[in-house]
Amino acid sequence: MRWETHLPWVALFRELRAVNKVRPFKLVFLLEMPNFYEARRELTEVLDSAVTKAHLDFLDSPPTIRIAQSSQYRWDFLDFH
Image (tube, rainbow, N blue to C red; front, top):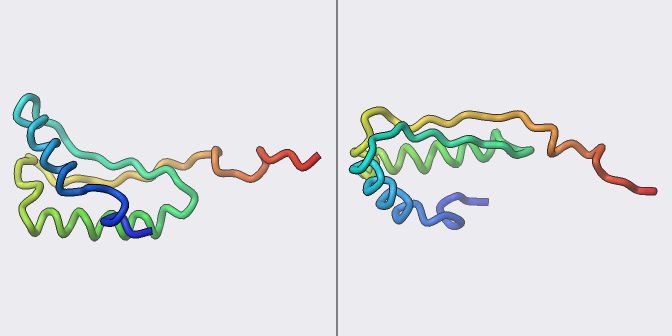
């Protein structure tokens, strides 16, 4: 999955800019999924591109990515009986 094709990033950043004018915030993306390594790499590329293109120049600090480990994605919840 390519993040750029699944999320309207530029529109999202425009809305975040408007919110930041009302109340400054720190942008943190929380990834909670089974294959978070690939997702993190792709999200990092998107964020690096956004910083380069000045889409996030309104932030006081660069966005961060955090990983949450979840038991939600374990297979033991499936009932085959």
